[in-house]
Length: 203
Image 1: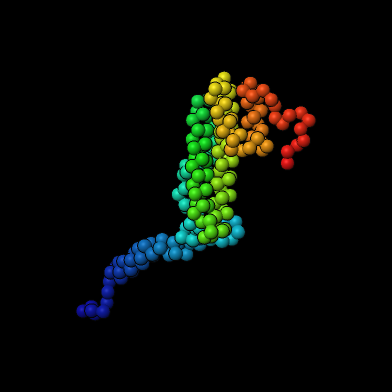
Image 2: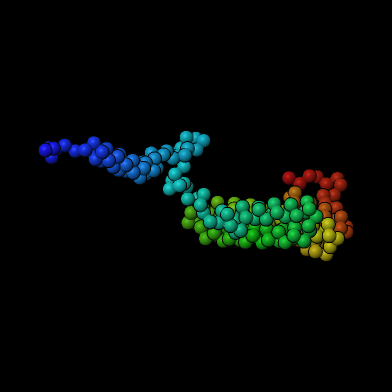
């Protein structure tokens, strides 16, 4: 009579296969999690990690990629330059008008903020005043480019008001103001060149 402790060899083999299969399945399910936990964060050039949770919030500010920003206005200027290069003057005019409007709004907003912080926080007030000046300069440059496009279209009646606005904003002694006046002289809107020959250079 065979002993109860004796187990057929085939049964032992089946149990061994079952245990091995369970082990393989357990390892397969745990490996992805383990690999994910042990994968190092990508490093930047300076050796620091680029964990999205640690990225400076300034890089994610929505206006930095929007229209109402210096970057947005500059993108419009770049698109206008591309349109001019392709002699698509209508598209260039549209882009320059949009850029001019963006820079004008920014300059006004920065100026208002500078006034609001005057006497409260000098650093912020000066920073906003500087931003107002820089965006006003960009607005006048966009205006000048727009006037040139109108002149290229043989529409001086549209260029003259823009050139006068630039001179009023820039002052005739500044470089952009002198360029705008020179355009008026070439168009025949003014009769006397500036600076006149023999005049002492303006500081």
